[in-house]
Image (cartoon, rainbow, N blue to C red; front, side, top):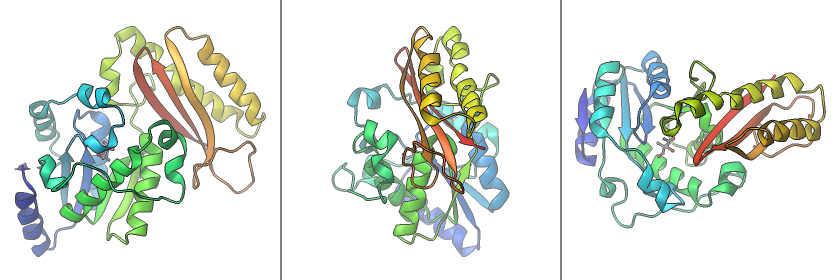
Length: 282
Ligand code: PAF
């Protein structure tokens, strides 16, 4: 596996590969790699000649400096993980100045209002940071295809919107949420839960499954109430939000219209660990 530690080495590598006519699949990450990332690489492997990943903890997408500080970083562990996976041909580990040559700040974007919903409302400026780093990475890596997890469904929608509005020649793919055995959505944050908390957190996915069984059976206010009641009775857990939203606009709905697709979104804090999950309703 090639380890590309600067923009220059990345660009030379990409140029050589493009000259050989290789199709590039790209999965950007912030490190702390786990099995969920493997499913991105696996999808990329199937559809491309070459898989590139990146590891960069992007400062501009954190609206809380403590969160940025606490973000787990262990490059050697990540490199061993990638090496052992055998899925990845090259990993780009840029310096801050490779992605932010002048100021480490984000550009302002508009994503047709997608940026104002859910995580955008909870974390002001977050999606400008994501947009800035992903646009720069796309321009440097020049992938044919790029892969993002559906766990961050809003991020995925925003990146699709970014690629379309800037006419970037990359196809964006969403990859289904990889779940732990008990159903908890895989996340680097799960490591911060104690074993009993990690087991108890399975209630998040169980609740989403219940919501799916109530879909178009009872009213949305009734679903909201049942979900709030579930978490009100869970010691050590606080539900930050639960919303049922249109899958395309991400706007919360209070009624299920025919011919629209809906998804349930939830954020639950288990002690101080913020867990997010979502499920397509059918
Ligand atoms: O999902 C992530 O890990 C990050 O938001 C991303 C897409 C790598 C941008 O920093």
